[in-house]
Length: 147
Image (cartoon, rainbow, N blue to C red; front, side):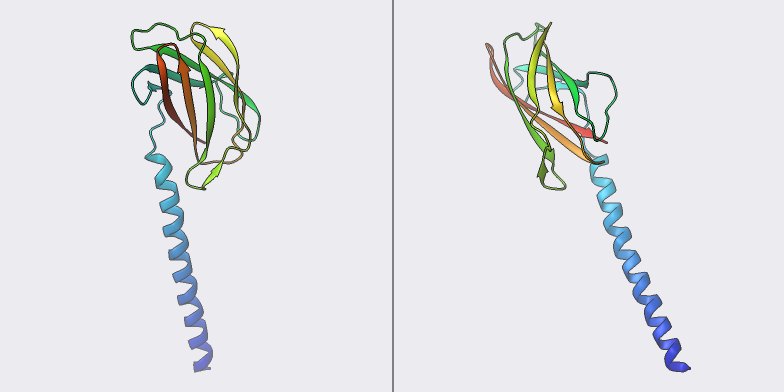
């Protein structure tokens, strides 16, 4: 009977150890995205443009293809027209890219560009990297999206 209790106590100790490890991993994973800056409007890396990024329908939808709007202005507030925009990104914590290849498909006027083909397949921190070339020069901006 004494050896049975030893096995029970050893099993409980192992279960507690595994629960502690899983809790530490889970809490660490939860804290990282919360520290990410999730501004929807910011200056580009070199300050050539001010970029704003938002879902076209106002709501971020997980698992669906959607369109977003990227609005570009100069530092003086003038809309940026005729920009060439390339998009990349992914989930930095999972070390994988985007499941789609978003593209700037339409210029809507007043510095606003439609970005089609955006899809977020799971919850977590996503990043979208924009490389922008226009008459004022070339610059980049990264937007964090937290689902």
